[in-house]
Length: 213
Image (cartoon, rainbow, N blue to C red; front, side, top):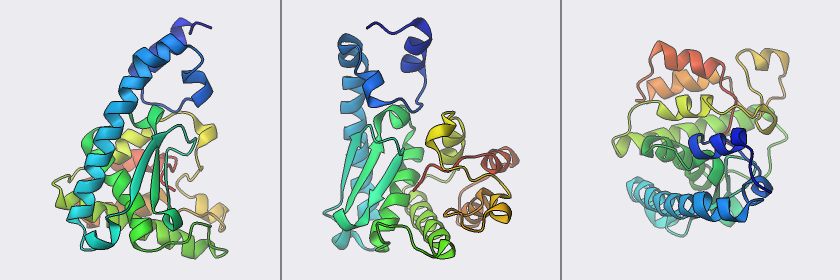
């Protein structure tokens, strides 16, 4: 089945979540568009992972961590027990290096800090784990020379709300069981840790839906 023009435009121009069965439904389109993107992103992610590991004070303990590019419906996530990171091809194929540095660094933080694979029964503890992973990722990104909050701006452009964890500004006042901190809290911490945040960046984060798990 051929893609219609609207779908074709999205595939060519936007790094936005698309289900695996959608991007493989047209074999010719898949091999022409997505196979090269898969190869390029795999190379970039492995290179960035190694750079981040080398920048970490726990490099020896992280040397066996692997990263896989796939269609995972979760954007990017880590499995600390298996020491692996999964990153979605359709979202990140066009991600700049500074976005990859923070996103992969955040997940590397979950592994380095030995966070459990399963969410804690204590939502406050899980929120703290997310902030700790943010800090770990930001510190590594800054060490590599990436000091702008481009990751937040990049994530704010993703539109498929059905695939996100909703975490709008003020959400915790409405839902004390939220597993993620307020985006404003994450933005303020990022600024404190060395990421340069303009007012525009901060406003975007207030509306940002959480992708980092």
